[in-house]
Amino acid sequence: MQAETSKFFVNGKWTAGSSTETFELINPATGDVIRRVPRATKDDVREAVEVGRRAFEATSWRDMEQTKRGKLLMQIAALMRQNFDELAKLETLNQGKPIRESKGDVAWTIRAFEYWAGAADKIEGETIPVTPNRLTYTLREPIGVTAHIIPWNYPLALAARSIAPALAAGNTIVAKPAELTPLTLLKIAEYAQKSGCPNGVLNVITGSGSVAGRELVSNLGIDGITFTGSTETGQQIMETAAKNVTPVLLELGGKNPNIVFPDADFQKAVQMAKYAIFTNAGQMCWAGSRLFLHNEIYEKFLTELKNQTELIKIGLGQDEKTELGPLVSKDQQERVLNYIKSGSEDGARLVTGGTVPEEQTLRKGYFLKPTIFTDVTTTMKIGCEEIFGPVLTVFKFKSVEEVVQMANDTKFGLYAGVWTNDLKVSQRLVNQLQAGVVAVNDYLVAYPQTPFGGYKDSGIGYESGLQAISHYTRIKSVTVNAS
Ligand code: NDP
Image 1 (cartoon, protein in one colour):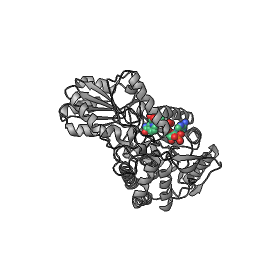
Image 2 (image 1 turned 60 degrees about the vertical axis):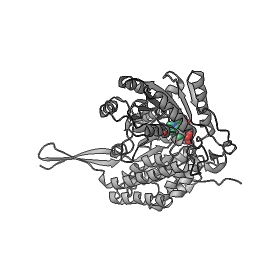
Image 3 (image 1 turned 90 degrees about the vertical axis):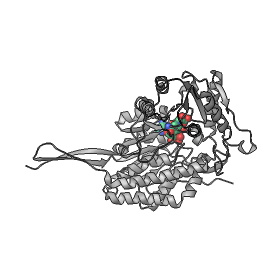
Image 4 (image 1 turned 180 degrees about the vertical axis):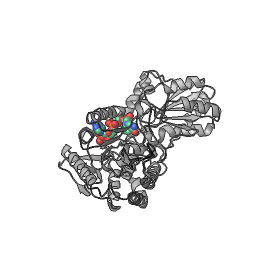
């Protein structure tokens, strides 16, 4: 049966764009073609940016009463809630992740829209004392047309993370989902239209990073860029943006330490170490991909972790019992298998996993067994590069000083986990770890209201939390002479 062809969304209309070229979307669990999507050309992108510009200049959106804009965002959230199961199933179909994770992502996305709906009429300026006869104050204005380049690991949640604050602030948007996973973002466009979002305010184009993405971030009509993805692509985007003096918000990779001390809650720490790396098949910038175990608990912890890892249920994402789904694509599966090969060649010890599962039902999908390596050093590729797959590297440490040094010995600095009940130890680590987010006795926690951003090569700026609004607004300083 021929797969249905979707359209993309510009100026309030569904369009196939100017080219007849389409690309296939694949269900990563089965290898089946699920849909075809138009491949936007440079001209399509240019048109979408012009549409966004006109919608911004028309002022009906940017000058809309802020409370009203908030209500509109709330309505988008309500439509998502009404279509909760459909959205979760679509995310799993397109991205592969287990349905229970997709449901978590949909719930997070709804909360993000609600958070920014509530924040829309709290985007405020300040009054600044200067001289008695002058009133000086600041206004926070939307920046204009914002570009959003969305990755394939959390297609819905990461789109919401940047689109909701940009809309709340009164910007107009051109968003490009990853070529592999555009379906749920196209749904947000549909809900925005149904909620009464004016034409041209939210435009979603489908296409490749190398053509549509490149054109979008280099277009002179773009006033701000938000990108989540690899450090390499982030660097390219920043170079392009520098030429146009366009502000960028970059959320890039991670090689995050998850550190366990002997006094931690043992069972909880084991369970969360597993969850921190095998959720979303490890395809997470914030994955706990480097596990640091104190030497007093090293053997016991590793044995328990190996046992629990071997019980993980690998399967098709739509099955409620599945704990580990496929990787997003054949390319990603091969990329991760190459890392596994390099780990073994470089002398790391494979504790478990490392191969594709043998079950007949999983043969056509892009599955990988959950994998653990020990005897890893930071000079090995698997010890220092972001693998973005279900591969855990384990290290041993003896003291706080040593683990701080080892944890910070990376070009990344996005997220860190610390497991101890000793407040002095956790405080020292919180202060000394070079990571934008630290979780103590926890992992994979991020709320729409908490800032998320990285040190070093992990990015620039903050997503989520009220701080994010600084990327989507500019400050105008006004002085009124009353004398
Ligand atoms: P990329 O960083 O290349 O892709 C992320 C997004 O950027 C996609 O929407 C992509 O579009 C787009 N893109 C690619 N090139 C350009 C460009 N020149 N200009 C504008 N947009 C562009 O990551 P990959 O998908 O290639 O994955 C490779 C690795 O990147 C992963 O293994 C992982 O290590 C890392 N990654 C990190 C993520 C994170 O959350 N930090 C998310 C995704 C990947 P398209 O896909 O359509 O080409």
